[in-house]
Image 1: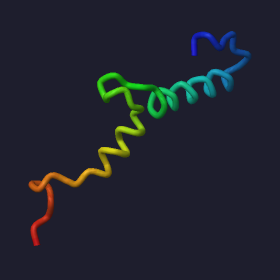
Image 2: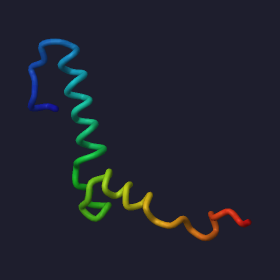
Image 3: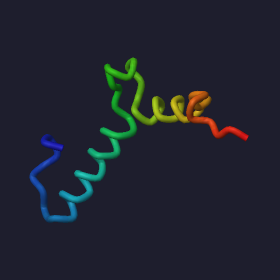
Image 4: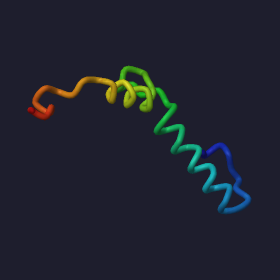
Length: 58
């Protein structure tokens, strides 16, 4: 975001912030997650079976 200025108005700033947040939360490679994107990690996590202690008993 720093390299995209100067801004011509508040709308330009809002768009730049939204683009940065999208990149940060969806597309950046995260070292603590095994160098995958946060979105990929979340998808893989959601696909895992729940821990047996968290499953409802019938």
